[in-house]
Image 1: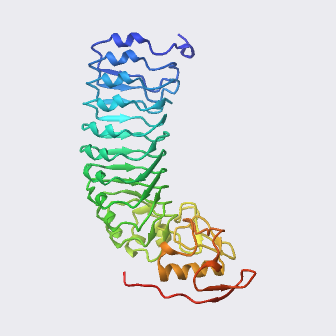
Image 2: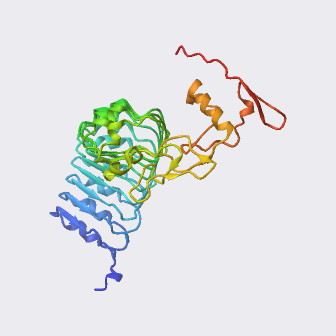
Image 3: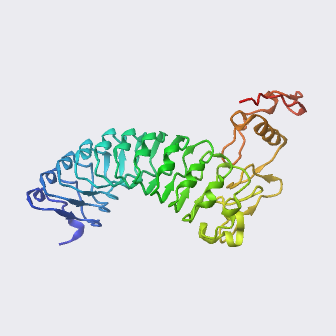
Length: 374
């Protein structure tokens, strides 16, 4: 019949008591909701409605009764509501694919019950809250994709118990705090993608111990300092992104001559293929094959390697750099974002050691002495 007039999934599917595999992926003509009667298919091992974007509504809690289910793939089906708690009761589940929907709510702590699961993919939804500490119960987990949600809080230390992880993809969230030391024990990890979060601190040297890492993206966070020398010895590294942070020279020379990273651009651009130098910028923070790094316009520059834009550099900016060096970036007199843009409300005249006239012009600078004993 006419696929445009497909009435949807019949409830009678629930009567197929010996059914083990149900795959209806990429059936855009399917309409309606997922029948609750599917929960009666006690022998079902593989359920796939991926890319069926004509489906409506929520995931029925009755799917949590599929005690033999190993694979649940609902990616790209445009389903909404919260993820049913009952899905975390599936004892045999190995793959939980829920990406590219409109799920809201949080990731339940009950996810720790899925001790057989190897892949959890919940990216491109509207999930909020934190990554639950119970994630550490997933001892055989290999792939954890949570990117493009609204997750916040710190990375749970229990993630270090997931020693079989090969892919950690959490970019485009609101994660904060530092990268915990336990992540240095991921001997199988190949992809670590933490771009566009709010992570702070220095770039951890222990990431240089991840000998199988091929894709490392820490760009667009709030990391400070320099690139650890240990990164120079990552022999499998191919995609390396650190731009749009608060990083300074030096760049390890072995990285600048590593012809495997970033498409081999180090052959023509050297260190610029790792991070654009001061006074230059690019959209990615490093030299691309097409354009390299672009010089800042006259009268503008930037404060950090790997910048994506330039700013007008004033006397106040220079003072701020002195404070950062002398006192530490945590007590910088100005607030900067990762591109070096200064908070317009911060006034140099309010800072210790600076004297201004009535018009706000700096008259004198006398840097205070700071305690460097700790």
